[in-house]
Image 1 (cartoon, rainbow, N blue to C red):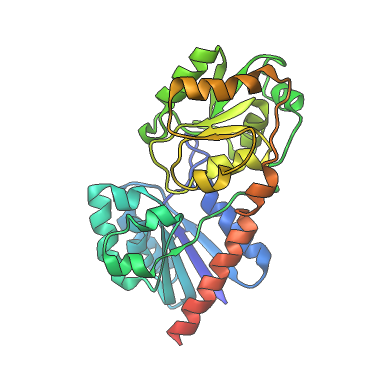
Image 2 (image 1 turned 90 degrees about the vertical axis):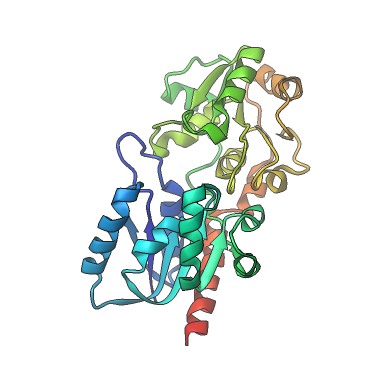
Length: 312
């Protein structure tokens, strides 16, 4: 069976990390071997939507996919240019939170047979009671092959970092206000650590940054899912995070981690023991495996099968 995944998160030189989680899911779906999956990506921005619709219409004229699956609400509109037996949409957060994109997302929902969100909490933010009732949780998952433990000394050497310096990682672009870079800065200054960030970092080098850090700081105001926490756990690296998105479920009962509202002194007390350790680690990989890209792809594939069966 054939599926087309449509994403408005095409990476560029300034943002090579953009849309990586969708590409990881497509790769995992392809490896399952059940579906012939194509990926169509276009840049973010309102002006790109019409261009994408025209290009999709011309590129796939006369073809009909078993499933066309859009990521982000606005993307579902140009995806309508491609014929499909069943249509799917995964919302990720801003598409149901921003006032204008929320309206656009709500308007396209009647065309979607399979509606998904990346977390249970995000389902509750989808506009419309009936839409919320039929929505499924279908996250993208963490690439367990790319994110794995690397000796801290090796990771720091490859990044030209000091071998014994106190480093912590803010695993996001500092310009994204909801990620709360300011909180990470305040904590790093409080403990005297150097703060690394991931804005504009090649995704292939991100595991080096995770393993180079004594701890990963995720003090987000909100998250649709929270993949960065899982990537840290897949590397067995300690992580401190606010209780948003998947964080509570991922970190519950896991020694060496913290999931709590951001309070500078509480987070300092949790972080300092990791900074005093030469190579602090937690038993995070088994927890991350529950949310691996492969397992999440299996859930998506099953949802696609049901969608096609319902279409007749």
